Image (cartoon, helix red, strand yellow):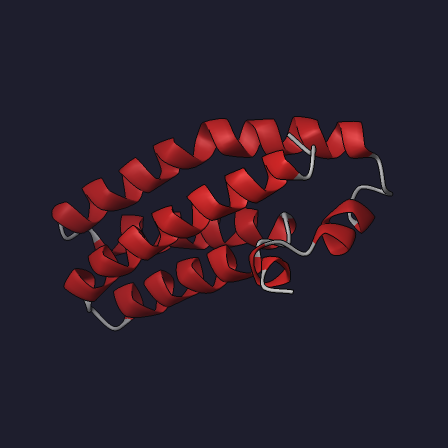
Length: 115
């Protein structure tokens, strides 16, 4: 199923011992914090602050991995790798992709009653 490429629900719930309420709390915090992290990433890229951009992309990647957000994690990983290579313009374009993946993730999690 295509949705499984966005969000591996059983894996994510397994991380919290199938406690749906706990997952909802974690996801709420994620959904509140992620726009701030993306803004921080965009600011670092605009300032050409490679270390801050790399650190922020890494943080986002970890958050996505913890939520079993497969495509979002892959997008954040691609950003992190681009920054490491000094490809900041590419990282900026990939950040647009990351935002689309986050929107897809939030929509899917809501549809599944987990937010």
